[in-house]
Image 1: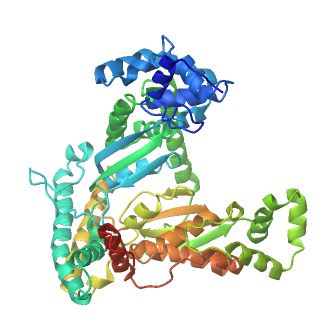
Image 2 (image 1 turned 135 degrees about the vertical axis):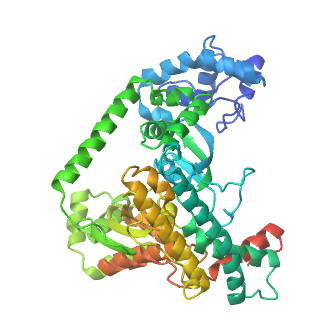
Image 3 (image 1 turned 45 degrees about the vertical axis):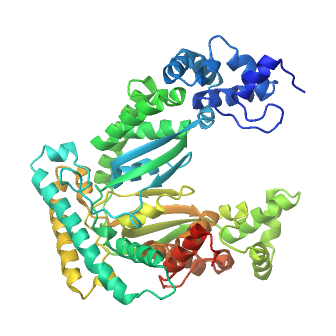
Length: 537
């Protein structure tokens, strides 16, 4: 049992939520201190409180106690003075996983949707939230009378400046006009029931309309992001930003580096552009990209991807069904894997079916996650769908995905609700104008030209995903309140797996196969009732 003097107990009380309990929360500490403390703790016989007290709070070099005085200047000075101390700890234990023990909240505002995808692509260790295209109108202009989209410095100093501005403005103007027109159409198609609150009805109609018209927004449209990530995530993110071919991502990287150094400096210092590790990484990436592009041009002869929506199951792991059975059983006995595989191979198909039924028997909703044994079946999908769908599905981090460059080559999504109306011509005209502008720009500025591509244009990408992650994705994204186009992708992925492996059908019990989109109204009613505390539907 630890014991402290009254002075020590008082000092500890400023940084731990409970001095007496064996369970407590650290607070009032810079993130870098938390990371250094935990990394040291893993190799110490001392309790965490004793370690905090002896090696951090009372160490004359660390001076952690000065960081809680409530004065920003004093706090920053203390962090700077303690920096070498923390760096020695982090370097001394030389494990990249130390960077996962401290984190920071980072706001990233007024960046393009194209840039947001690059940030979210950093995957594990970071949790992003992005401005919704469903609940927020994108028809607002700033005080200078400009629509909210990114104006890349390369484009703005080129001969394509006026073309870029004209097309982006036209996309926003068409979006604004059609929001008004389509809202009236949707109100006529879906009149408000007498018992539906007007606010809920308006929110539902707005969501339907904005979902259908988001395809008009160019990829350069401004969005806002909130990120929480650990140090390792941010180091990887910054490294990628610093070596990007897009000026915007480089600028985001510089600003994010500056701000993160104020909170978790030790965890991001290796991403500094001048750091030897970062310069070596930049050399590696530049050479790798050049070599792979050259190799592709020289050795790959094939047809380009044809336009149009599709989801294809390209392949699955060998003996997927039996492997899932093996690893469902592994932790419930004492057999080695070789013995289990031998036993499972001898099982009749009916017994395998009974085993899978047993696994899902008590599962009551999609939040009841299946055992990890499902991760031993993996699938690769090639998908061609609009950029808006990619924007939504790419954020699922428990998978491997890569995309090709965003172009206007693969066709575009057009909402069926406007087909055959006067709105269709407006929609198609501006989408085709955007394609012409993109085609003019792409030869000279292939990366920057992506900013002008409307989100409704298709993009090609692949998913490599295990059965457990696919179960979660398809059940979540097929829900009726979801966007129509990503619902279809989620349903098609689940359908392809069930057709190829009927034995896996029980694992997709909460996929919503209904084509109706009325679930959004029920979803809004549910949340309205909760908000007003008048009961749940």
